[in-house]
Image (cartoon, rainbow, N blue to C red; front, side, top):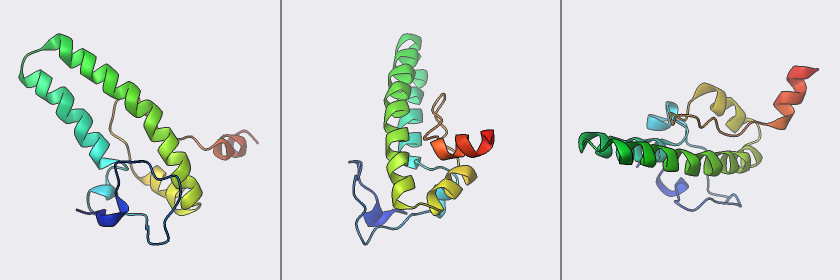
Length: 113
């Protein structure tokens, strides 16, 4: 509800003119609240069912999926919102174990100089 028309399950590779970076509501805490929620829902259901093998398998597979998807999506968002998104990344978290998101190569260069 917070993102409204700015949200899509398909990664947008081109920025629509009407798109805006949403940073309020749940987005003020998590960069990808739907990914965060889905990850913890799929793992949590297995915990509640007392299924340790599926808990570990779901956690691993979901983490691997988001570890590939989120950096790609964030690289695009850094292109769409050149100043805003890197600042937003520093102020929020992903909340999925072992998923750190996009690391801007320019940030690495600036830190090493």
